[in-house]
Image (cartoon, rainbow, N blue to C red; front, side):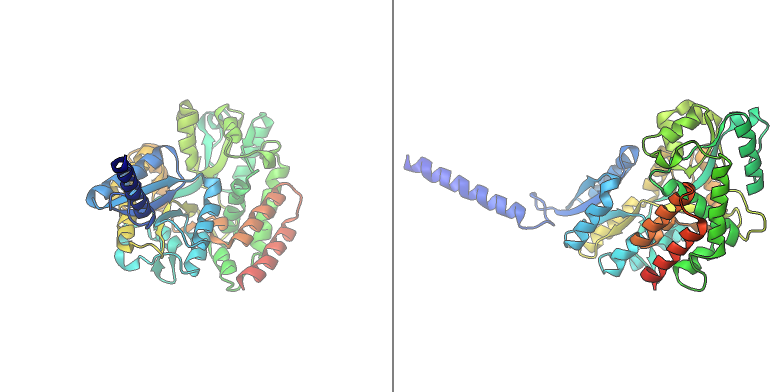
Length: 423
């Protein structure tokens, strides 16, 4: 009996030591391997592509295990912010570059990888969005752009052609309304879809320098006349019944707005190219009717149609606090390798921020050509501005669409907040 008790005590002691060993370090696995934590937000095929990249990385580094965690988009920003402030961030994480990443860079929480990566592999305008004061803090894999998708069948039925100017666009809107077709589907409850109109109009009116000047406090402000005029164009479109009824209460993610296009009730939608992925999963038969055009010019405006609204994401960054900076950097490289990027564009219909990765898919390649010819990529304001000002931008733009606020009032509010936050 004593022997049995002694054996049980020894077994409990061994288990206790094992448990302590497993808990003693977050950087070593139970098998003695080094551990990297990797957080991202993408489900479906994108997640599979990331997992394949992780598997290749682990094969090259057999002494490392990567713990992959997907966090839903809506919860991700808060969870990462809490992890950053709590001093327990993942080794490698998803961002979008811009102001959202810069807040962590300014806090000294993001690894500078400038000397360890080949910047020439990336679209320069895309990499700029995660480069601050000459140093690279994130590597972009995905590159999105917003275009105006339209139903070719409806355009052909009413003898319509892709508009080059805002005035031509208004004529199309009138024709569609006369024939009881909703001109443009808009799901603006989440505010960001409508924000594309303000950004695009402002860029077409005053050129991309307007936002840069207002953001960097270099002369022009967010109350510039071009922003007021952009709001006036939006309200002109609303008053012309350019959009579906109740658009400010329609959520984008649920797909109600997209269904208006699929069903032929609406003819157009200004949205990111992720719409193509939605079509392929929700209504693949609709793709044969689908085409796109770049946001029209404004008569007398300084902006060009080679000034494109775009966004980077995912942008992969590493924590300054990682215990394995060299390995974390190698994982960033694998997540933006040519193999990963080619899979990303071919299997998801997305664009990639790598220079020489050309989509096999014809539709995606047409959008790729637009980006290749771009002379400026305007990143979304809500990803570039500090969070407080970004939210006000979305709120005031939604109010402009709702005719609840004048463009002058919206511009004044933005400039007042910019003076408070940016100066």
